[in-house]
Image (cartoon, rainbow over all chains, first blue to last red; front, side, top):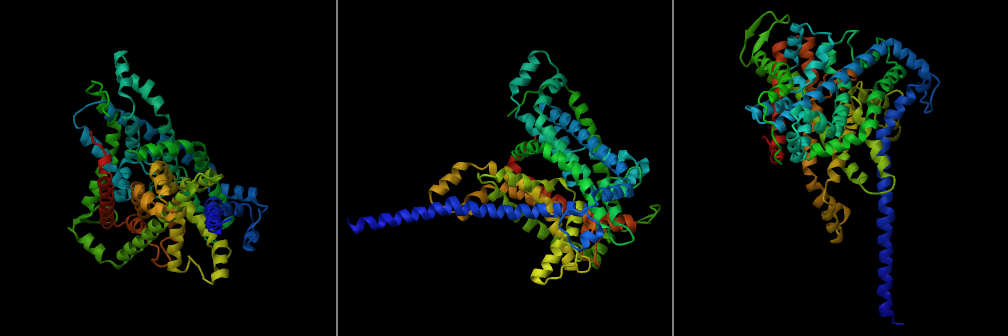
Length: 292
Length: 294
């Protein structure tokens, strides 16, 4: 055997094995490790919050990391302390009404932009896009005064109606409608269907994924509102849940963390459940929106 | 693609009317009011107005409190945008691999999107509680660092940034993953065939191709850090200790609704408006070829 030929061969083999080890074992292992650290960083604070919602102050002051005994008792106390029925009811209705209203106005608006020619189209489109530049904070004082003059302070109208306009919604549906094959509308017209029939029977069924995505986004958006409900609707009848949490924190004595975490768990659950249910639609909707 | 048009003349206006009416009444009119009020001094009850020109603005920009608030906000936004975006980009690139179990990781990373900044603040307030919060206690035991967000200004700002990034992580991951899945795989495969390592592939192929997503998220994260964190501050630090976490929106709330200084608050609104407008115009410019006005 000639050592001059076998040596490089061996060498190549061990190099291959090294590369195999690196690509198939070490890299995935490293990726798994990074992912586990990231997931822990994301998950742990919430798990810790849930843990605390089950404990008594004595248990969490000695930093017990096991579920405690007071889950129901904490929930009951937090529930009655801030009138949780009312908070949940208020927040659910506001979030539902706003999400639904936004979706309806966005669909008919986007439909108008895509399927009609009319005077002032560009102007109206820009008008709606401009809302992107006007978050509540840049108009909060006059908006408050306006609603005060309308008599809408501590009224559900002020938590819903101003939120119905949505540039995001218009863009999302407009983007979708531009991709619907024109032959569909041609066929509908030839069959004598009017635009509203076309909207109801063809366009609407095609909008399902986007409706679900926008519903999720807007429900969560409203559920998490803080500044506006604080200034415009901070009465027992109209208070929303984030402000209720602030009430749980703002006691004269030391913060009762077990009760606060009980409230956190209750307030976080509805949007989380919705996210889990509609997550697929969100990702599809975003892919489309991104594509604009 | 050009869509078929229906011939109706009135219908499109009827369809757009509700949205346009709301935009005019609740967006344009109050914004114009903000601009108008920003050049007046208004009595707390709103019954008397004196025209003062740009006095509110000059007072703002020479006010120590306001400049501090501006600085605090810029610092906060800088941390949230820079670290939050880098961390979520790296995580998304790693999570995007087709390896067993990675779908689970992806699902477990995006859910903080559903939480409010206020809840993020409470959850991290617990983690970093100086007496019994696991995060603060472990930090002290292993590094000796006293992290007390209730008494130390730097800790307080870092604490808020941490909570804000944690909450935004899910949102960023969703968009980065969507962007990554839209990348042409041929380019990455070609780079692999040319012997490019993971590092080179990331900087030469993935990062440049992903830049529209990154830029979009840069704008969204900046807006978030300036505007959407009011609840986070209000429910945890209340702007303190001292003025250490007095972010611009919190300052605006205090001047507009606690001190009832309407003109002064409106001037702050206008400065914020200029900022948002700049960012939005940049965004539309950058994504210019993708927006069609028709």
